[in-house]
Image (cartoon, rainbow over the protein chains, first blue to last red):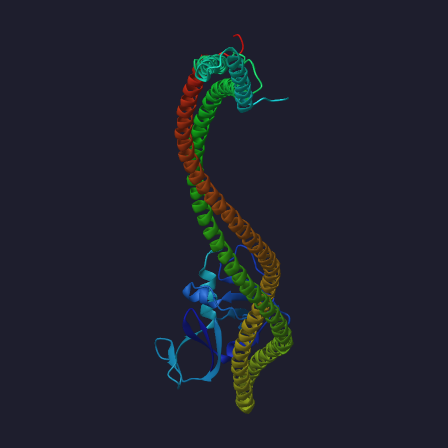
Length: 131
Length: 419
């Protein structure tokens, strides 16, 4: 399957390519008050409103430290939309099926943690407000 | 005056006696015819007449001779007041006149001797007074000569000491003159060196001006290079942005190709290649940026170094301007010092010359003082001899006085005219 790979929280993370809607840059993210600190804000893109999440802070509680302008990975699935800000984008790659631990390895030997947008959404939903 | 000599008198007397004898003989012949008687009577009468005439004649001569003898005796006792009477006109009269003249002369002589002795006595007293004065003067001269000798000795010592001091001062002035000459020479050397230093400083300043000008000219391309590097960086930013956009575009193309499924695989490959190209471009752009950054840093460092060098050169130029000014002031000061040192040398030499003249005069003064000392010594000896001679004169004057006293006493033995 095609997998979109990026780095966040010191890990290589992967999302199946069919969930990826677009990679946006120069995103004008508008902060929303009283939301978890990993929730950077909302981003309006071509008629859709995306909740933008700092992936590193959500997964490893580590704020993004890169100085490069952030890309926003826009995800859409089941009438839901979400934006992730990675530490660095690696790109598209073809991987085999994932193992039981949710890990896959590329042919270059790179270990990738596969993520499902619904799990990310759930994890975000479990966070308290204002955290 | 008619003189009658004794010889004539005797001849006249004999003729008278002969006449008388003849008269007597004639008378006797008349009285008696006896020849013998007449002869006897004539002889007796002639003898008597001869005795009478002889007695009268001899008495006359003896009386006058006795008168002269008594006068001579009185004269011999010192009585010159007796006048010699002239009783005849014969040769005794001559004796009487000679005797009277002698008495007169003797009287005059005695009178003159009296006057002379009086004068001698007076002169002796005057001489004594004068001798006393001369002695006093001689003592004063002796004391003055002694004082002058002491003064001359002290003066000689002072002059000698002063001469020594002057000599030392002269040596010091000669030394000062030599030092002045050396200082003048060194000042001239310093003047030449200062002039050389000023010329070199001016040359260095010109050289610095040339270097600064050359540096400004050389710095222009570097400054232009800096501007060009800035432009390159801007271009690199555009390229990086383009590569980023290309990367993003290729990513999105890959995503779209993935959605397209089997139909989009070729497109996904192309998108992936484009992304690789964008990545390569980005990497190259990063490398170029790094190189450009290095160039920029180096250029900036060179520019800073140039500016610093320019500032240093400007500071150096100011410093050298100051040095040139300082050299100018030093030159002026050294010239003034040189002039003053030369003036000091001239004045010192003049002073040394005048001091040498003064020393010569002091040496002359010392010589004169020594001569004065010798002269005063001689004067002292002379006054001593003079005193001894004056004492001799006093003795002689005393002897003269004694002699005059004796003369006076002797003269008193003579009675001149009723005194």
